[in-house]
Amino acid sequence: LIDTFGTEKIPVDEIQKLVADSVDLRPAAIIERFSLRSPIYSRVACYGHFGENAKDMPWEQVNLAKRWIK
Image (tube, one colour):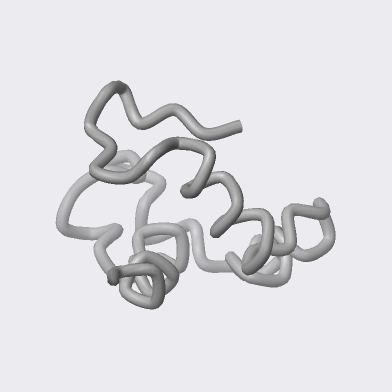
């Protein structure tokens, strides 16, 4: 489930527990969290989902990570 590509500062097991305890990974919850049913994709359709035009997209937010910082 979690692959840090060797960049973790805490054990991967701890990271997995943080995610499991605070993120609802059911498909319906993911759709809701990232507003995947909203017509928000025209902004990123021409240059892809990486880049300046996607910086405000819900999947680019790091609000969960900020909660986990110790």
